[in-house]
Length: 185
Image (cartoon, rainbow, N blue to C red; front, side, top):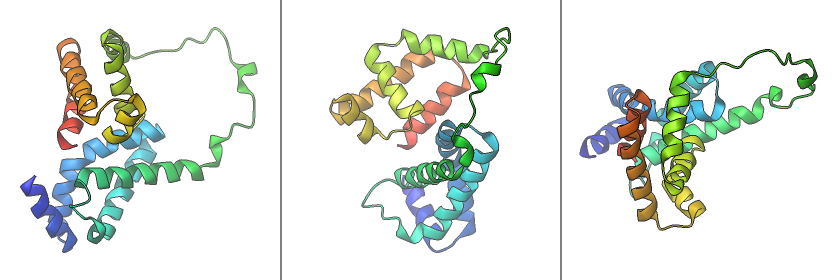
């Protein structure tokens, strides 16, 4: 945390090395949020770069007394992604393509997805809901605890318990990404 404060102060003084270090520290978590929202790898990479350009340009606006750096950066990434999606005209489907779908085409599902989905289904209902709100819908802990109508501390313990249970049953990179995101919140 102290290291981040020093890096952020350097960033506010336009130190490019500080930006690079913050990029290394936060880009995996921010990319995860962006890709979950936009679902397009090329756009997600561009949006991540845009996010860090905005962080560079607006670093002077960050106030550590108002919240964590990650939360501030998360909001920038989320807003940029949502604004991008609003600008894409192809979001509106103008044709009914279901008529032309070949019913014999099979849908391939990655085995890792099936395994993770199975592990998620084994969690208690409140743990599933907590994971869904934070990691798949992109809500912050503060937004999600209100959605579930539980105290913030209780909600955070749901997340920690769920991640621990997932670690036991699903030993893959996804769980480590969830843990990393949890550590920087």
